[in-house]
Image (cartoon, rainbow, N blue to C red):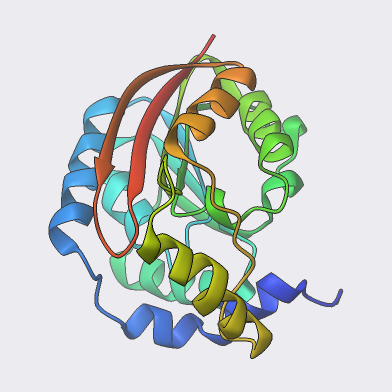
Length: 215
């Protein structure tokens, strides 16, 4: 078995704690979930990248034909499979895979989802190009991403420049690469999508929810 990447090992190590921790902003999570459901159709084949322990995939599954949900961390997928066994759903498949490991030979999807993932990717542009290739013409890309503020900000500077690097030095935080919401939209457009809808959600750091259609 190949050695895990540094980030895959990090997320696998904390997977049980991650699964046990309550969602910090349940209202925001449920709002995002309902908004995502409104864009999906019963006949859709959906790919969720960076699915974590699989909760979102399982909640969306009754609304679509099939969900393939992946994460780079085996520990996360182990928990997702446990949840799947309890739920008994037959239209969900969990797999271990990084973004670029999704094969184009396996076909394309009506919708690709990436919630709380894009700011964790070392090469966002390459990832978005691959996501576009995985999306059918006219299909949707739906994401929710922690973003940098448009004009700095003391709290963001303290978190991104001091707190996170210290935590990373002690193995307590993964790689992160924050871009602003406007920069994120430009990158998604450059990958071959038209942005249809955006909204921002304030928490410790601001997240941008975004729906885009492949042109």
